[in-house]
Image (cartoon, rainbow over the protein chains, first blue to last red):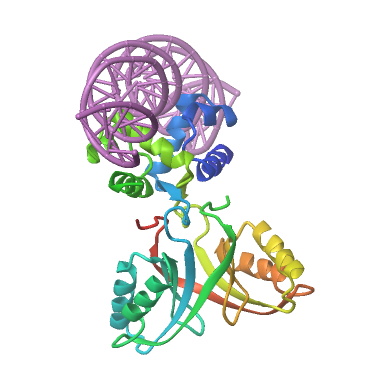
Length: 150
Length: 150
DNA sequence: AGAAGAATGCAATAAAATTGCATAACAGCG
DNA sequence: CGCTGTTATGCAATTTTATTGCATTCTTCT
């Protein structure tokens, strides 16, 4: 992982649809060398995957929310059970176990409030292991970066 | 946006490095038709961009944290100022204005605790507009999905 | 039923990725 | 130093893939 690899990773994190020859020019390498470096970065797992990022609004998921969750029981068993149920939900984009006053944080990508309501029913109310949950609706996204700075 | 478009979007959200002919097979279209659909999805902005997703640990950012921030002053001016400073930070992957007891939530991708400490100094302490902040270190990531379900 | 517009498949073409191979750069070591 | 095994590089040939023109089929609206 030298300077050129890092530069390639930065380019790919911004736009992975560019041609190899194009990026080769930018890092002053021949296309073949450039390609071999990128292939190595994939094989060694530095690059996990290449994906299309959709516009949430145009894909029908304009509403975002973050929910902090406090569980009643904190056993390994109960934790796993809660995460199993949460991660199975399509609307749950991210699920984290965290330190602090709460146990879990979920990031939701929702169609509308109706979906939020239904989701709360399934995950937080009734006979779930949830003691308390607290929702923050996202008003504005000032930054949303998939790239990891190198 | 019909069933085929949605299927293509799902495929691309999982793996955008597949060949066009390959995906065309999967949705029972000719390569040319498939390509034209994908191009349309890009042009209309449903597909925002195509990017490489790195393995955070292998890219040297193994530590994640979520920080909730309560500001002292909530004016448009002050809000924008805080977001400007926050979004300029490399370690800040996401920055949201939210409803609820706090004003802002930041998602951090950190190298180590030292970087966290330095970042707190710059964003939260001293002469900043921050009344209170609360950090949740991420212990476990149960789900981390870039795809938007369709 | 009929016409306009959009989507499709095929085949040709253009562009891009991939490979073999000879050469150059480099790290370890007597 | 100079030797040597290893790795990276560029070039050119080859293979694979994307892209386009065009005739046909499918949709939708009347």
